[in-house]
Image (tube, rainbow, N blue to C red):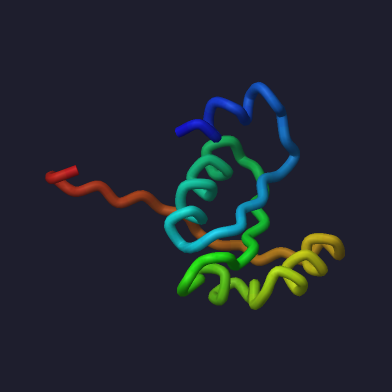
Length: 83
């Protein structure tokens, strides 16, 4: 994962992602690993995660980030015998 390698090099205070659920999962995994806050901007087809946390559109999400609003969520990884 390229983002994982860049985080220690760049030392960001937070991460932001604009994309669909698959992209959000990738960046959320890196954010969790490095204990960074994550701003999710809806940019995919279905945007299930973004909608669940109230990120209705890019403008409202930007306003929430600017004002310091946050939604806290659990992040889990499930592994099966097949991978």
